[in-house]
Image (cartoon, rainbow, N blue to C red; front, side, top):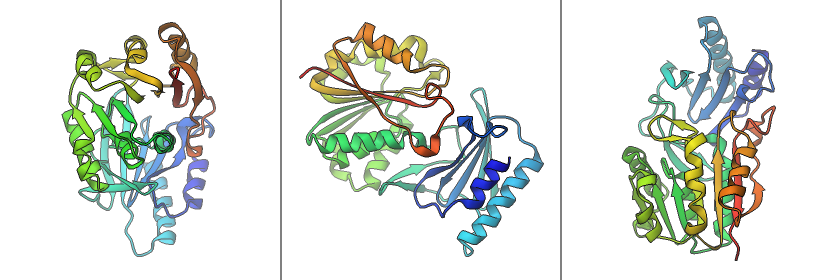
Length: 309
């Protein structure tokens, strides 16, 4: 646990939401079960294996000591979550969690909820993807964007901030989309109701409605890798990819996201070659440095493809 304790002892005062320690990347032998995130003013400690009281005590003591140095006038706020095969147990170890709780990333604000569920409202490893969308749309003002598996609509917020003409957000969860609406308001995008739509639909049963709002200059695919009854990447991703050519405008781009260590780059690249060969590979978006992984194939994969002009 030395590497994690050292990361805590040397961390700076967090301003934006960010990962502090990424044991899951495999670069710190013996620490693979641990992840530590900052959702200011709260720290989130996650373990993917059972943790002992002694281990939790050591980490909490290290955080308390460093926090006393960084913010002596503020109490430590710490949430712990244990995850195992789709199940999770969450408890508050120190302090309290604001309600509502919003955090910043590159001057954009998002609502988060650390005490319920495994997904907290903002995926920190996708920070570079959100930055790519923002920079891409800035060079294409008025772009029409399709955001599939939109969750809490972070991509929609940054796209509209960058000058997108419209964003169609589609997700099965009406609750997640409601938080997405709040994220738009939180960033002063109240008038985006004319430019952003929120469709609480099963994507695979809604192609007609999705097609009517197209074609799109940018399509974002960020599905779960495995969600029972909703999406299983190994069989369902192909159903998305074969739709891309018909949905994209000439010269349009598609962002394909895949976050599972069980499927590598070839999974997406081979299927794109088979199902949408007319789209050309442009680049892989580099992951944030704080999510460094022992294997590029294990880590988050964000691939950009482009339709012919």
